[in-house]
Length: 281
Image (tube, rainbow, N blue to C red):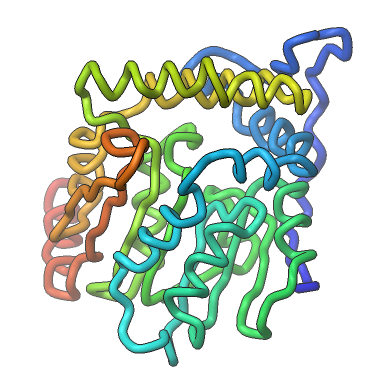
């Protein structure tokens, strides 16, 4: 078991209605369908069943490994410091470790329940888990620089994805690497239809059987409402990343899940951007 670091975040008041048959605790409307604390609470409740449910998704873990490899980290990652943003129960951490087994990895998540499941698994000494939301990493003593940031299924769940991307950028060394693994539809009607069909036939029924129907209804709706792949690639570029590319997945998730890769600005670009901001004041 790997020790946890915790921000000591106070417990939010529980807005749930125990008689709610949908399990849609904390749901608020869409660009926070859950408010941030409600979403973390929902993941806390789903944590004991989460790995079993994701195992129903063919290719879930293989796709994560593919995205981690797309960071193109040198060698076995020796001497590198990597950040896994939104590690959940550790599937993304395991994918990152497979791509860079000799790297130091800091894995964080806002859900205490998910993080406890991750930390309870067997990990090498170089892996550390931290309980903190992206917005409070500094309070949890998560500081850069990192050589690469990996974020799986995170930005769609943030109240402010642009602020999250800025945080990732600022934690990276100049030229450091970013890989975002995310549900982002291509924009084609056929891919939206496949996503709706998969959710109706598999995702939501499985979630309902597990007692987490609200969370998996949120998953369906959040993917439909979030950026298309092209829009999210533009968002990453607007955050200052360069060489941004959106790369598709094979199999049923083609046009539904993408990897977004990019590099943090160089020292020269950061200096120029800082000078521009200063002049604009």
